[in-house]
Length: 358
Image 1 (cartoon, rainbow, N blue to C red):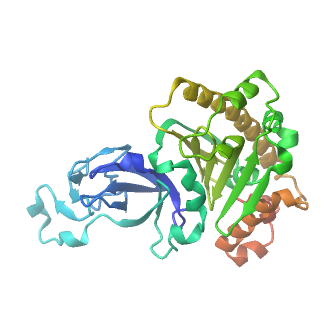
Image 2: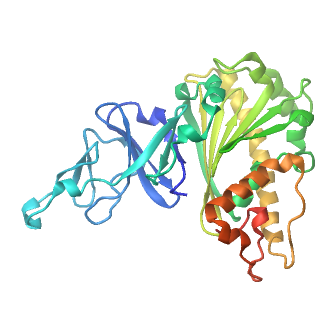
Image 3: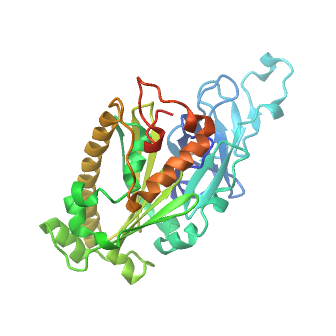
């Protein structure tokens, strides 16, 4: 994961020089900050002395970064400038002991990091995605309602489930009542997938579903037809964006061992929302919490089923094209040797299902 572009946060958290946030790229701790010149910088979040994390959480560190363990101090450009009792170290080259740099880029206000110095720039990978996201004005939104959790399944199973709507008519009755399933469309690109999920023209279903459709209004800047669609984006390998008329949700799907997934959610909305908007956003949260709970049950069932001896995956529907795309991307990253390796009989999780323990 650390050699791919990983969502770290939002520019709202990095509004001025000295503001910072901490995140993880895979299992590696990362620090992102706004330097004195107004640029973004990222570093591995580890002091060069004894390995303490230099900062935690998010906030403002002033004009320098001071490790809380022994007080080694770094400029915002990562260079080491101070060491308590420096003479006790003898001759030392401070210039060789700066914070270890990482890559950082913005995508429409979302901050991504990458620990691979040779990785292709994110901007080159996502094609026209910035233009398609522009209508949601993500840089101007503010975060609210952070949530996190874990699922007892392999992370790739969670992503497989996100990447297809084929299960919606059977597994998500509420979502089926809201969406016009006939017009649900997945557009597969090299590094991301864009989903169009038009809402039904006539509100139907439960009182909560009807109320959401009747009250929702597009956020500032969103085209009028945007109120009639939910849109989803998956950015390889593990970032999901849910684009609603009333808010934007980010979801980072991270491996937490072979059979456990760590979920990190954050919602974003325009500043100073009115009572009606906040009410609609609560309705949205309730509707999608139900969908998420249904999905958690589904993927747990898949994880159990994949342990069945002798199982090999069946054919994929055209509606599951993004699942095949994801499996191929995982295979390519893991190398051809993995794709052709014989299955271990004690762990018969097939590569085709993109649900292996890698």
